[in-house]
Length: 349
Image (cartoon, rainbow, N blue to C red):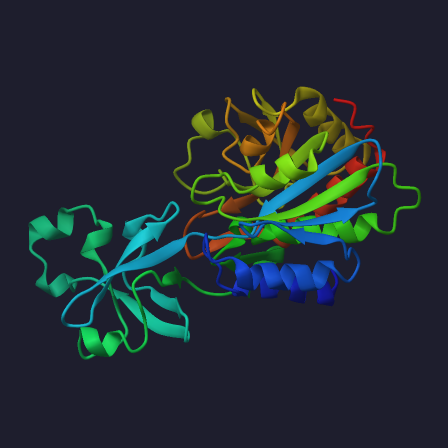
C-alpha cells in the first residue's frame, strides 16, 4: 500500500465507532471512496453503498462492516463510578486495567476500567471468573452529579490502543475487526476503476451493526439485488499457542487471504476464488463453514430469493481484544485477489 493508503487505513482503525455509533468511520470511508466512486447511497440504518460501473447485466456486492465491539453505559452510582454493558462479544476478563474512551455527545472522555486491587481480594474472589458487573469505569468524578456533567446513560465506550506497527510487516490495533474489511472494499473499488471495459456492476458496502447480530448488510443486499456477494472480514488465527489445529484448522499470519468454502458459501464461487489465487501464484488459505459464516455473508445469502455468497478473510490473532494483530501484507494480497476475481468472473451463479 502507498503512504496515502496506509494513512487512510490508520484513520479508519484509530477512529472509535462501536455498533450503532458508526457515523465517524462512515464519514472517513465516504470521504475517501467518493474521490474515485462518487455514487454512494446511505440507507436508514447507516449502511453506505458505493456503485461502480452501474447498469451491467451481472453484479457483485463486496462488503465489510464498519462497526467494532465496545461497551455502553447503563448505570452511574452515587460515588460517580460508571457501570457498563457489552456491545458485541466482549470478554470481561480482558478489561481490567485498560484505559477507555467514553464517546459522549460533548466529546471523548478518558476513563480507566477498574476492579478491586489484588491486595484486597480474598482467595475466593481471586478465583472467581470476572463478570462485567465486577468492573467499573472511573473518570475521576466526585459523585454521580459530577459524572453527569461529562457523560450520560447510553454513551458508548471503546477500550484499547490505536494502530501500532510491529516487526516483519505485522501491526496491532484495537479494531482490525473489521476496519480492514471496509478498507479492502474501498481499495478494491479504487483498483477496479482502472480496469478498462469492466463487465460487471460492483457494489462496495461499508455496513453497520455486524457485531451485534450480523444483520446490517442484509439491507443493501435487498435494495441492490446483486447476483453474488463476498464478505470481507477477519478470522481467528491458529498460529499462536494453545490453539488445537484438529479443532480449528490452520490459519497463519502472512500466508495470504483465507477463502471460505463449505455449506452456506457457494461452492462455485469459492472454487473461482481459489483458482484465481492459484493462477496468480498467490499465497492463500482455506477455511470451512458448517452452515453459518458468522459474517455479513449470512444475511445477504437470505436476501430476497437468495444470493450466492463467498467469504474472504484476513487471519488475525487475539480477536475481540485490544491488541488484534495481523499482517499488512495479507491486506494487500486480499485487495489484489478480489480485484482480479471481479475483473474476470462471469458471475453466472
